[in-house]
Length: 228
Image 1 (cartoon, rainbow, N blue to C red):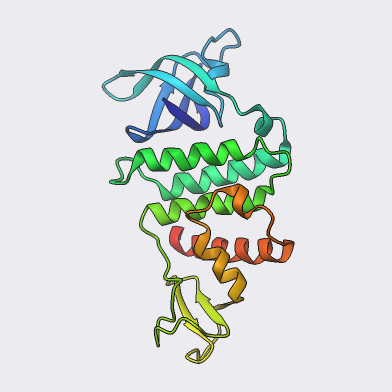
Image 2: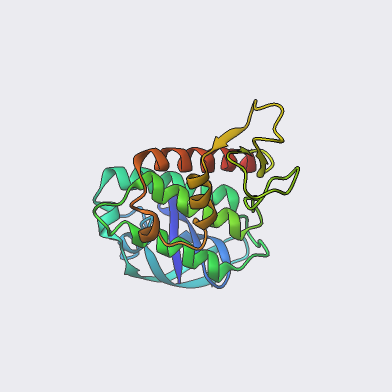
């Protein structure tokens, strides 16, 4: 079983399918004949689809021998804004995850599947859902920032903190000397950041618009520094 992340043209009548499996992690498969309108595989291998696949091993490529769509996430695919946000999330996910990574593929698959499932909610904030998903992925592949205390004095009760998106470290207002490149984080938003990984989307979906903006900004800047 895989989640289809992306599908692209390959040779005259074929496509290459990028997927993620709970058993093998990121995989790349060739789907023969899927550019033909009569292809039975075509509709089962769309992006954002959970698919049961039979893989045929080849000398140069692995091939899709058979495929059966299990969950098509139509609530996502029928909404343009959801498709755009999910497409960006999958592109970043592809950059973060490599073939053969020594990570818990089953856990990553669960996070990925839950992210797609969130889009069944008609009230979903697509930006918050996207960065919540990517934050969870970062935490589970080893990019874990230090959000519990000041990196300088180890204090935990400061009035304000500054976050370094390059290092993932916090500095309290008493220890900070230069704020260039740092993001000031309100205490209530720091509390949300600390809960982002264990929380499901429903537990954070009611935060204020200002909080959504700041949380997404922090995650985006931290993320950009990890994929450069």
